[in-house]
Image (cartoon, rainbow, N blue to C red; front, top):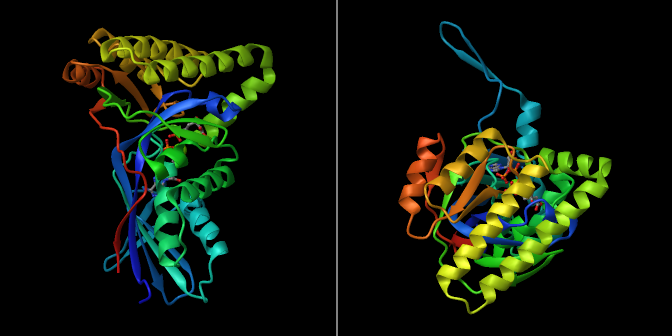
Length: 336
Ligand SMILES: Nc1ncnc2c1ncn2[C@@H]1O[C@H](COP(=O)(O)OP(=O)(O)O)[C@@H](O)[C@H]1O
Ligand SMILES: C[C@@](O)(CCOP(=O)(O)O)CC(=O)O
Ligand SMILES: [Mg+2]
């Protein structure tokens, strides 16, 4: 029986250590979290690719009212650009399969705030590849979907380490470097994510760091190397047989150092720093930006203090989210 409709979902992530330096080939540690993007894919008879993005707000809406009608106009150039990840994801899958001139309709709903450092771009790419590949009868492993998701990010952003699509596709807690990943022993992490409410574009932030790196390589090299070293130290701690409390204390110190280095390369903002320090004052062992920065989210490690830290983040003007690691990555939810 041929497949008519597929619903797939893929999780958000946090980068625990090593964002930005991972783009320069250094290692990083990330975990999938329990916020998801859902993508439904089905055939249509128009021969066209149709994308229904229910969570994307198009800027610059103009509405004209007459007595008996309403006209809508929008900045369609920007609308097409914002759907670049979904479109590229569909195109890459179509290259691998015979669609017989049929069109594909993709409909997206998401729990992940956009441009917030939680990997919404990777989750939408991974869930789209998962849904469309299954619709077209391709048997791709989650790891293969992650690799295609990396190609999507490279095509749209120009640069991407691939850590986000990898962890979104395979789930869990990973160490990642230059396309290779390793699952770390699963541990419950008592974390709180704090959202500033503003967004940053990963494409622009990665490009800004690259420009500054090229202008002052002798300053940036040692900072990126230090980020890489602290990731290795964090991995040693996570995989050691130290007791949980000692592990968290050292990881907290490393988070604070990582935040300082991210601030040094220019990806923090006043609001992010306010949330980072509010969390520490409320008893977090460590706190830092997560993801590309320039707005978006920070996270804090707060064993026994999660509700105090959540309150402090809210008082400082952020939106706290107490999340859990998602062991599952890409999931096929329904096939009809
Ligand atoms: N629900 C969604 N539907 C369509 N596109 C999405 C969705 N969520 C994210 N995207 C795409 O991902 C972009 C944000 O990616 P990025 O700048 O990498 O930030 P992040 O991955 O941290 O959220 C959006 O501008 C849009 O192109
Ligand atoms: C800055 C970076 O390290 C992570 C970006 O994550 P996000 O898109 O902000 O969720 C870029 C990358 O790894 O490709
Ligand atoms: Mg992204």
